[in-house]
Each structure stands twice: as structure tokens, then as C-alpha cells.
Image (cartoon, rainbow over the protein chains, first blue to last red):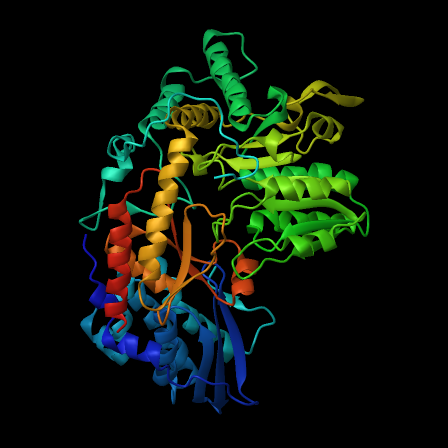
Length: 152
Length: 420
């Protein structure tokens, strides 16, 4: 088995890691949730501003590896303008992508730039890095829980 | 090198380490990872097992398997003899005064939990203080927080300096008549610091506190002498010293262990049982309820014999060479920050590389066949002290080579290219 590092660390991932998009807080009434990966210590906060049923703004702040930062950054760009249901469906599709369970080419293509994270599926221990932001997004959309979302 | 409490012991004539032949003792070291030779630099997480340990475990299961201290049949007698012999081996290994003071536990974590729940819980009063160094592993923090919650005692942290050494002046100031327990890691898993355990113990004893030492990282690298250290409890793990997982040693002073209540109840730890009441077995059985990890204990005996065969003088000398070379070469990589630069240091190199998260570094090094640890090393207060979220950590054993260090450094350069 040979895993290709370049497949994991694609330029789009390195770019989003270096200059994450929507990397700031959102003022109230945006809701937010905290995500934490207790095994590696990654932490991030995701803010969502939903108007009616539309995700108007998404932003995040946090600290973690390139995979977690790029995933969060790409996520903010991908869910902006989507409905709640669409955003949650996208989160589910993304989870399939990074766990290698996305079969069809069409489904893959529908994920757009998020496909850059497909390489993660070859690295089982790094899947949590990629999915932390999305778990946290779902929590923020549901209304912030008292406890941080963890990957465990 | 004058580490207090680790005085050399009499042994055969000193010979330099034949690393090439030693590596042949470890089957896993000849494996390839992703087409590259394995470079195993995660020894602080767990050591690899030599063939003699693997064979001892296999033999115990294949030819000797029976429960211990119970049967009168042949197999039980054989298993009991082999099992009990390891306790005396372990006593000699730690230079403990008495064999019954050596308890078999699951590992360092269980050893410290035993001391916290038996000694701590039965003696601590509200307002009593437990002092722990800032560089303790979570396993020497959390058990004390739990017992503090149960008894009203207070846990206080002993500060460390920028090099990752205990601030002894601050320690002296913290010590008082309220101090009942001092917990100190012999060698820090996150920083590599070798702590002045003998000196810290002497100071603790002046105020009447007992000293609990986490020896998990010390036993694979240095001759431990609990009498020279002067401490009261010393806990360690088999798997860090090239033995099996699931077994460890807790040494404690007879007078303390005898006064302590049992921790877990069950078979093997009783004298007589009736519903009117139970009397407990003498040491060490009082603290060893239930069927122990028999094959693992026997494997640990093989690991002790193996380490003694090589000798800690030779091991220490080679590991110091490895650390010196690794420190020089890694430090020369642009963007490296070493975390933990104590004067007295064991073979642990903890660092960050600017612009690259330790987990990414771990993945990139893995692609080169190099296994390191990335994360908080179960020592989050250390990370907080140094203002980092995580570090990358290369940790050495006597079977590592200069080639291993070169592979590490090549991997660091590769990571810089990937993230350029």
C-alpha cells in the first residue's frame, strides 16, 4: 500500500491552511458551537448566521493541523447561501468523502472544492481532523450545546 | 553522569553497545512501512519487544499456562514458580529492600491510582496539600485530583522554568506542614527532563510528606535505585521497558503498604473470608486481587533480564550520543523550536516546526517510514506552560542509530518542502 502525500496535501489545502477564509467571529445573533478533538487537542469555534432558512454567513476560529484548518475554511465557503437542510446534507456527503464511502463520480463532483480533502480517506487517523469542523457546524445550526462537540 | 539515585551497579566489564546485533533482537525493527525501513522514534509511547520477551510470553501460554497460587497440579506449580520469580527479579532491578514491597499492577497509571485511592484516600484531610510538578503526565495528576475531591485535599502545581526544569526555590516555598504528598515524574515524557528526585524527596521528607515517583520513562533508560532515591512509592510500566503491555510495577515502603487499606477486593488478596468479615492476606497479595497478568509478568521478567544483560551504563552512554546528535541536527533545521532543554535530559526531543502543525509533521514523517508522536503527550499543563497546543516528539531507545536520526532530519526537510 502506498499513500501519496501530495494527494493529501494538495495545494488548495495548503492555501486554505495558510490563509483560512472567513477566519473571524460573527456578532450576535449568529449562533456558535465549540468543537474539540480531545486526542490531538484541536479546537475550533464555528459561527453561523441563519436568516429564515438560509445560511447567510459562516465563520470560524481555531487552531489545529492543516487538514482541520483547511477543512473548516473550505466548509465556510461551501455552505454559505445553502439552506439548513442542504448544509446538513453536505456535511453528510463530506463525511462519506473523507471515509472513502462516496461511490459515484457525480456525487464526488457535487462536492466541488471539498473534493480536495478526498485524500484523507487513506489516512484513518486523520479523518477526525477533517470532520471536526463539520460536526461543529451541525451543532451550531442546531443551536449551541452547553458542552463542546468532541470527535470522540 | 551523576544523576542522583541512579548510581551504577556492579556488573560485567563495560563494553560499547553493538547496536547492529541488538537490532536483530527486535523482529519489528526489520519491517518496512510504506516501502521504507521502519524508523521507530516513538519509544516514550511504548518500547519494542525483543524476541526473548515474545518467546517468554509464548512459552508461558503454550507450555506453562495455569492459574497461579491456586492449583496443586504440575502446570499451576510451574506457572507459580515462574511468576513469583519475577517479583524477586523486579526487586533487584529497582534495588528495593524487600521482595514483598514490589506489587504487580497494570502499569504506571494503575500504580499511581492505587497509591491515591489507598494511601491518599485513607490519610488525606481537608486542607492537606498534594504538590505535583507542572510536567507531570496526566496519570500523575488526575488520580490526585480525584482523591482531592474525595477528601478535601488541595492539589498544587510546582512551577517549571523555561528549560523545563523544576523550580526548586518555588518548590521549597510551596513545601509546608500542610504538604502530605509530593508527586514527581522521574523523567518527563514530554520534555525529557531528568528530575532531581533524591533532592526533592529529601526536602519533602523534611516536612513529613511522602513522595510518589512516576518512573515510566526512567526504567527503560537508567538504573533505578529506589533506596538511593529515598522515595516512598515508585511506579513503572512493563511496556515502556520492552516488556508486554498490561503489566507494571509499584514499589512501596513496607510500613506504608502494611498500614494502607486494600484497594480492590477479590481472590488471592484474602486470608479468610466469611460473611461475618474478612481478613486480608499479607503483602504483596493484599494488593493483588484476582488473577494477575501471568504471561505478561513472565514476559516482563524476560525484559528485565534482557536489559540487565546489556547494562544501563552502555545503554545510557549510547542514548546520550543519540540525544546529542539529534539535538544538533534537528536544531539546525530552520524554524525548529525545541521544547524542553533541561541540563539533565534523557532521549526525548520535543519540538515544533514553524508553520507546520505537529500532526501534519507526523503524517509526513510517517510517509518516510519515521514513527514519532505528535500531540500533547498526555501532559497538557506542559503544553500550556510553553504556550503550544502540541509538539512533535522523537524519543530514542538503545536500538536507535545515527541513520534513524538522519531519516528524521530528512523528513523534517521534506515537510518544509511540502509546506513551502
